[in-house]
Length: 254
Image (cartoon, rainbow, N blue to C red; front, top):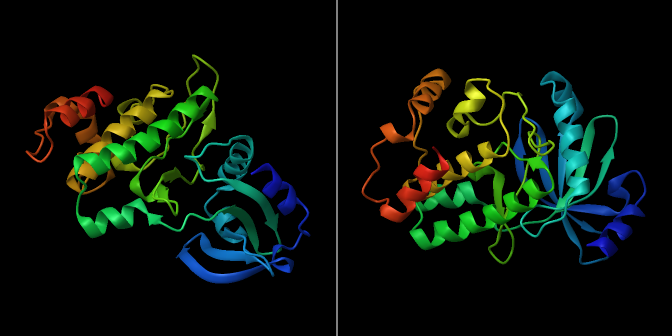
């Protein structure tokens, strides 16, 4: 990776002088993600093209800067790699590792749910990523199937570090963030939170992978938050979740 970073660092300020677009991997309100390759070489990357106007309109300047800073500092086989950033008048570009296995969310949607073995593998990959991040002092705060992508060998990697934050040992943070169905009670109650919110969201992920939907989901955000605050002990688990994963979910979400 170091050699690749050094090579990419030699690219001129305009990324498309050295890169050519192969295909579009995804489009969203933020912009688009392109599969790009180095001209005349067999080296591929994912180029996240973020509209500057979108960043300003949604007040995401701090999140984008934080994501860039954190991704530049970390290196794990279970986290997508950032090789370089660029910018022009309209876009901010993030040159990322190309993971062409697709989103875990798309796979889950197509299959409906996963068996225990597949779920265990997915959760194992996420646990490795969390273990690395937490030992580095970083809290992730945005776990969900949409933020998990597969590489060519089928291993899962974390993407989208807009809500990630570095905190000291024993410290808490109070920012309200995350996807409603995955938000921990202490975030909703503004009590201050730490690394434990990532483990809460891991329990929610286990449930969703085994059933196809998260355990707490209301007609709107407030109803979802109210269900979360009632607690996991009020939840009737479906029979598809056997005793061992149920015990794990209850321990993670207590």
